[in-house]
Image 1 (spheres, rainbow, N blue to C red):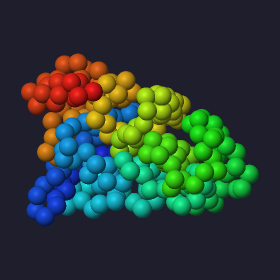
Image 2: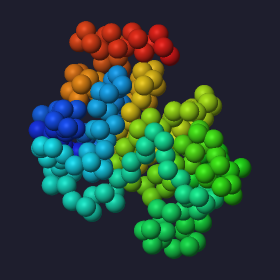
Image 3: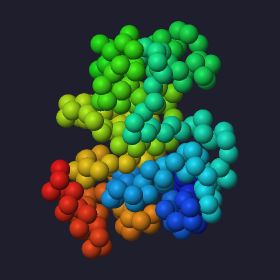
Amino acid sequence: MIKMEITLKNVKKRYHQKTVLDIPDFHFFPGKIYGIIGPNGAGKSTLLKVIARLEELSEGEIFYQQQPFRKEILKTMTYLTQKPFLFSASVVENISYPLKFRKYKRDEIRFLVEKIISEFGIEHLAHQLATKLSGGEAQRVALARALIFKPQILLLDEPTSNMDPNSIEIIEKIILKYNHKKGKTILFITHNVAQAKRICDEVIYLENGIIVESGKAKDVIASPKSENLRRFLSLEYYVN
């Protein structure tokens, strides 16, 4: 039997009695990149937040490896917001933080930080104050920090927003390499349908907190079954 990385059972989230997320049953399998698409207010960010336990469920349960969610699980995942928070310290210090928190040895921290800074092509930013970076630069630093401790699950909320095309290409390659080499599970919110098709194995279309359609990325995007998704895809291709 294949173990589910994340299982949602009768999950509901409400804000002031309004239901913003309603997922009866869904499984995120290990080693896949899931693209989460949908209009603004569809519940995409809320989905990541309840999985990351940044927000409590109104109803239902979330399981990890078929076991009830526990605090220890949070150490195996990372959540990157659309507007990442960086400490008022150097880029190196920001990227080092997850390793220091997990009590890595000093030499190992130095080696891993230098390696990931090189992979991300941000050597020129290494000793700059992180809070002075541009939006795109800050996003790259935040993603490097998110990946450095090799989490099992990555929850990424529009990780390439505010980036130039060259930076987007670099980040996409890093995410693909990380997923394929490490076999991790990645939930990836994007408003760019072409991007979802490029790098995602599966696509989930959310609308009004409900999963309207899901399946293999190329199939869902090429041959949507629902009228709502067809309309959304037409609009997104026009905009992008």
